[in-house]
Length: 281
Image (cartoon, rainbow, N blue to C red):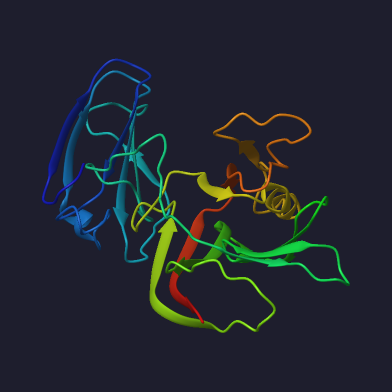
């Protein structure tokens, strides 16, 4: 029961029934559920008939108050009918909560690639892709040489994760030559989003899916496979275009973007998106 100052009237008849009733307490859709200890304004009236019936009553609050489970005889129901009650302090979904089978947080990211063509090393690309520095030599596999800022920790509630993603802003024309290029970087804005499976905050229905659009899926797949605690389900690759041998989804032709999908095994996620403006001179 949501709201406040509710009176619950119930007459239990028959035999061997169990009824569970929850008093939540809330004010507005932005107040959260339960709202403080508002549920203590709710009351009940119960009368019982028949035999072996149990009515469980639970009052929810968000102030840290919990009590043990109590049991007493149900009025009018004889010795075999009982009422149980308890107070719990934990979050619970509100009546207006809408749960979707899939939730998406969409953000388009730009990257930076430098092609190295020297006389003393094989030709290679050094790329900044979704916060990771990736090296790809001609004819070889791509490798993450500096991983993205993705960390996780184990807590009593479950796994928590933090992802820092960098979005590069600005149209940089292709430049080539032997001169030294100057790259100016300026942080424009930072978005900080905290998500949890706890319905009392901005929440998500697990698992949260990390979708990467990248020309370096092999490097990312290896990185994800190396973090089985956070990415317990691994990753899957999808190409929007047909890729023919000797190429594959994890080793696409140069310049082809594919999609890598990796579920996060976390109950709480902090997502930090840094929007960075680039200029090249």
